[in-house]
Image (cartoon, helix red, strand yellow):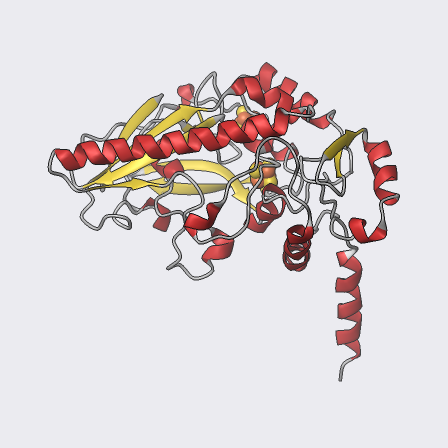
Length: 353
Ligand code: SF4
Ligand code: SF4
């Protein structure tokens, strides 16, 4: 476990997600920490080993998020017992709904990533995930804000970074959510931090949200049985969003021993089941191990879902063949030639007076 501290001053100058007073207006400091996921479950997950790998990985992820939330509440309660105001931060899926367009930009109440990098808990990888040297990004972050004045800790020096910019994380994102060339910068308390520029966060919503998972060239997939073609631009992403989310609701839940989680307490509906997270799980903070993970994923095949919800995994060519042979009613909840309907619409609008 790693812990760090930030103050109003060390988080100053950042985007809205760096505002430690949003959750607690009197806040003077924030405590950030990181706890590890069970990496023994990563390779079976990336390799799509049936029947248990997805479920085991998901259960660990849920358990560690709950652990981070419980730890945050313990720190909050400790600070309150000492007479300070304090609020715990939910580690995931809790957003600032006061910001226009929050559904697309997903701004957190306080970015645990900003808190972690500024307080030296970890550093940014190219993917934008936070990682730790020799362990990588298989970690879950937590945090607390308080009106106690705590001594801030420094960011990690560059030689402590786990990221060698191998960019393999860009290659394991089926819809290429982030750039392999362009950077984005964030300034926090006088320090500049950099990571890959986001092309469009909806690309991650589509893939990590489970609507789809087939990689651009059809050579491998995530655990999602959705197979929409790669969107070339924002127009195609937007069209696919409404279509894919509607179709996804009609699919059976993935049938294995983990039932996913219900984010209803955060105002969302439906069960979420993990199917991606590749950019996080691939990176072990060691070039050789990360390369091995990349190979495991890209040779893992493609997923198809049976009508009872069970998943099967096949080599890419065989999976394509099987998919073509699915009952058309079953098939249409996983695929539609949405690009054709965009082109048709464009043609019609051209004919309009
Ligand atoms: S895979 Fe890890 S080490 Fe390689 S660029 Fe991405 S974050 Fe950096
Ligand atoms: S979680 Fe999956 S879809 Fe989202 S950015 Fe990472 S690799 Fe891409």
